[in-house]
Image 1 (tube, rainbow, N blue to C red):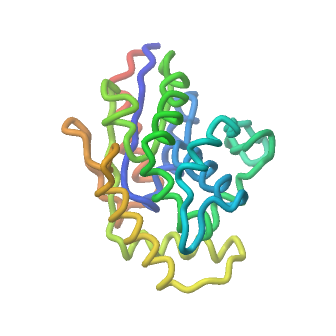
Image 2: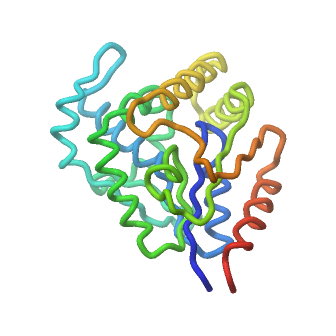
Length: 229
């Protein structure tokens, strides 16, 4: 079988990770959630009081990047790889609105992006990988055989994220989630280093009205055309 790289980019809360996990499982590929890596760095910054509501010590975070070790360990019960920061499982901690509020400013730092992109490229050196994020098809793997760009309306994405957080027991308002989604869109799309843009050769999928199953079947069909059995 000919292994390929599948790069899935798009806006926050478009369900990239959900469909990417299932696609990787279908082809027995490695799945990497790069957004989780940026969330892990953000969590580190929050826990070490390097970022907050009215401050961001960028120099201190850059200075401490060497103290950050991010790894993924497969959880057989959950059925997916969970994120570890310096040996500690932080999978649940990084999925909170607290982390979501600050992940975009952290991700704008070129030093952070360089560190994580280098790790991501090493993960995909042997191909057979599904990776999702903001700059996979444009920066991390510009030569990926299959590039997907996921999008949906801000309102649709906010509703999905709001339900997800409520299901996890978080007490928050829909308006706060919508504000977070639109703010992240603006920051991700306008940052100087590796902004969120659709690669010229990416296939755009608006999943506002698509189920996970419909998205998975679409991506499976596209991938099969490129994988020789």
